Image 1 (spheres, rainbow, N blue to C red):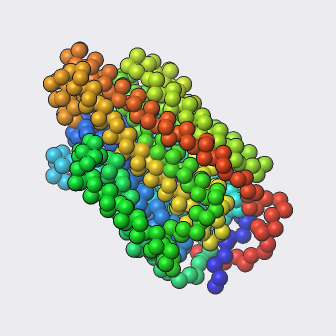
Image 2: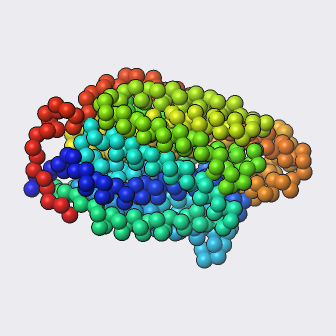
Image 3: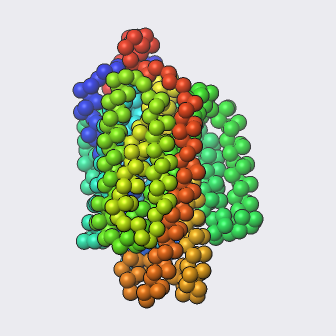
Length: 525
């Protein structure tokens, strides 16, 4: 049978399956935000202050390298079973993360290394959650109608980002940080049950050829680049054999990736989609969005809990302005796009507002009150609301229906890889600035603090002598401020690139002949 798209306008089918899709997205979003508020306690128990960013980097890197693979095998084998498999893998990684450093796995001595490894496994599963959820919506709904559904999903993502810090703070204060991971298990089981019953997609008949060589080359190249930004100037000198070797590995593997993709029968990342100017531009915008956003906001709970003295629960509450603003704007943008069919203004406006938010956050110091931080992150949330869904929508509208999964995975991939680089680069900036600041302000005591991850626990900070605690907090605040200064450099490029996007009519609108042609509907699972 010829591969076909599902008939447009299947509103009932979409509304039936939408709760399961949203719950799967909540799994990935909720987890990342929960972990953010729990990180100071995790580092306090397992140690490893200098490895703080790796807990996030491992997750984002796992998501990044697996996203194109999930998108492609979903195109080839049908998205339902592949989507369910990604949920199962995510749940397995969550369970193992919760057990990291426990007596069952050898105690806390290797706990941080275990947590980083299990977070990478969890990220591999998360890579399939977002891309397949968005691609499934693309299968069921034409682009013109897609804005309102993706707006709903973006709003749910914002709700998850709101609930994440609150749930994470409550768990950290009243239970144990391990439940930040265990909470995914009941949610995962509910999502599996709902989707197994409600999700009905076209059965596709295609030649099944996976571009494993391309996937391996891309994964090695991206991992090498992330390791360079993580280790360079921190664990190893920029001119060291380790960094130069990783650079050579990245250049070779990515150079080989291009001819491999050109010859592959079913390329993991078809290069022809980049001939479309909009697709290339929105991919770059997604990369910069991930770089600035995910790389920087991971440090907000750290600032609130240590410098501003908030509890884990209160630090979750303090993130509400950002999440609430993002949710409201996402709903507005989704409805506006569906009503007017126009979308170019939103990434331009969102990028400009996000850059202003980053600039405001870079002004924070040890004397910044919590209400002022709330205003700053509210501005950041406004920018995020304009951007979160539009990158996916423009990417999907720039390709043919047969490449929908590839477009969805590529959009998620570039945002994820931007997040990988952002987290690793900003983590290196943070570590270097913190170490230098502690040494200059506190001397030998500062060097001891920099190497002692257990001292990073907010509760332990209160037991330090007053002058040492003051020096530590000042160094920490300056380090986080430096992270946001770097984020500005990437955020300002978003509206500049978005300005060159050509506003092509969305498929599925009134008078769209291509979308109104009758197409046979494939059999459903």
